[in-house]
Amino acid sequence: MAEIRIEHLRKEFGAFSAVEDSSFVVRDGEFLALLGPSGCGKTTTLRMIAGLELPTSGKIFLAGGDVTFNRARERDIAFVFQLFALYPHMNVRKNIGFPLLAQGIAKAEIRARVEETARLLQIDHILDRSVSGLAGGDRQRVALGRAIVRRPKCFLMDEPLGTLDTEFRDLMVRELRELHNRIHATTVYVTHDQLEAMAMADKIAVMNHGVIEQFGTPQEIYNRPATMFVADFIGSPPMNFLRFTAGLQRGARTVSVEGVPVAVPEIHDDVAMGEIALGVRPEDIRFSDASPLRGVVYGSEYHGTNQIVAVEMAKGLIKARVPADQNFRIGDTVGLELNHHNLSLFECTSGRAVRSSRHTQVQHG
Image 1 (tube, rainbow, N blue to C red):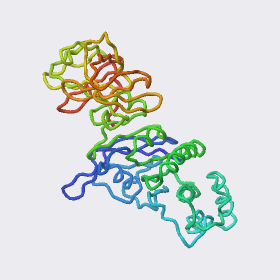
Image 2 (image 1 turned 90 degrees about the horizontal axis):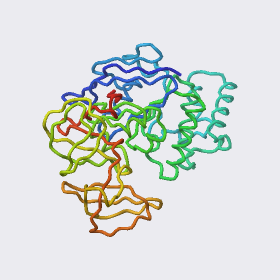
Image 3 (image 1 turned 45 degrees about the horizontal axis):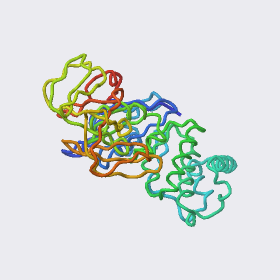
Image 4 (image 1 turned 90 degrees about the vertical axis):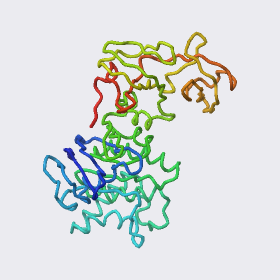
């Protein structure tokens, strides 16, 4: 396997810019998820790494070599598509072994490598079955097997679980991560599903409108979002925003929200007067009669061990994750206590996080 390095990658289609100045590194053996909504540029980025699209500008390095303008077949990568693209007239064995057959590898070695790959994927018992009658999860394993059997430098996957139902998708998420650990593959995985990315990836690049808004570990992305978009896109429910107008001074440790002073991590930059958003995750809110920050219960969703409670504030709804056995009624006034260690602040105009003791190490790709 090998390191992938992207430097100032850009792709334009006429006047439309699909990818803008992307730079990141996937270390040897890392699993990177390109995460974002439809049309954000993640698949275009993947296709440029694969050699299926040529960049407008920028560089792509694979295993230290510049492959920016190499053809796909010259890059020694394996691509797994959302649609399995299996050969329906071949059985499982022949589907997995086809890339090796095309390379002119001896039949005995093909047989050995196919059987080794099938055992790894736990499909050795169906090698002689037709692919047309297989369930979705097994068909996906066959598609993965056809990629693995080549022993490429890296794996590129474009929403490979998108057509599976929930049960198969949850199973394949676990199996893909376990497979990654066993073969120590360098993997770039495109998805719009934050749960897939958070469950599998070592690093995540969150994309929006062709721009990588944040690059980091799942923990960094979730706990220290670099932008309001990232904070809103990651998390279920997403981060709440309490908006207010103020200027912030370096060293400040409190802000005023709806007339109530709220403790925040120490601010490291001066921020000019403007609209600010205080970001708080639902699990960092608890109900306290002693808190002067008040709201009215609007509704709730029962989730077994906890409940998501919507509270109406002066400037909109926020959601809190509280214990399932906590009792209240719709219309009750409740006090809200925020965990000040985990709060974020954002400039609403730029959407960028205000640098604080929580955000000094944030990466932007």
